[in-house]
Length: 244
Image 1 (cartoon, rainbow, N blue to C red):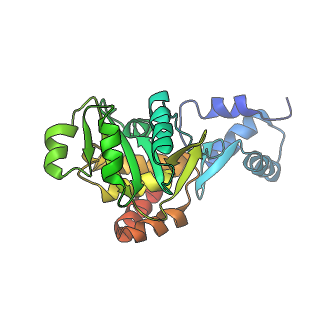
Image 2 (cartoon, rainbow, N blue to C red):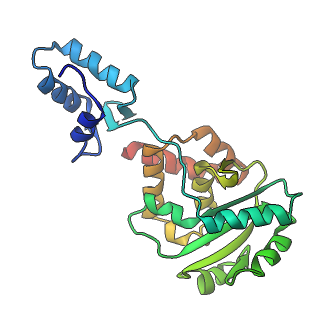
């Protein structure tokens, strides 16, 4: 066989998340024993160009190209968003998400589920009352004491919060959700609400996000600056990029 396909690459990375340049060239040489060194490096360049492998830092590779963050929006969350849109058609800013989306990035899987509803400042009370009429365990911009006493360990609860202006959001099947860049910054800004995702888990989340997904560092930094956490977020970015 005179070409490398996705199945070959997946086999190379089956037991290793990352491979060095020399390790990849060695694998190519096993497939093409008569090829000269320059030819092997040209083949590696082709694999990069075709998205079969990608650089995670100089001299280190992972399989495939980076993905877009496309979390699964549950029917419950989707229906809630549509009801809110129907009830408050004048809302310019509204987004929803589920803290369980973070489980793919963490070592320890969170059993609790926080449904987060963010609406433009000044509308939170009305949104809170509307959601509270249909669900139990609904909180509005909870205090650290409320989080500790009622939210942590709760199987499912709803938190209504004001959204920061110009927050990075996107759409999934017409449902407004935060971009991954927004979630990463919010974890730093809302330490009490996201206490389960601090410390080593926060570093895990940043590492996996920066390694596996298309993340705009300029978007992260711009939003972090608006929230007054640029230095802290920058430190996390640099630490995790060095860890890759």
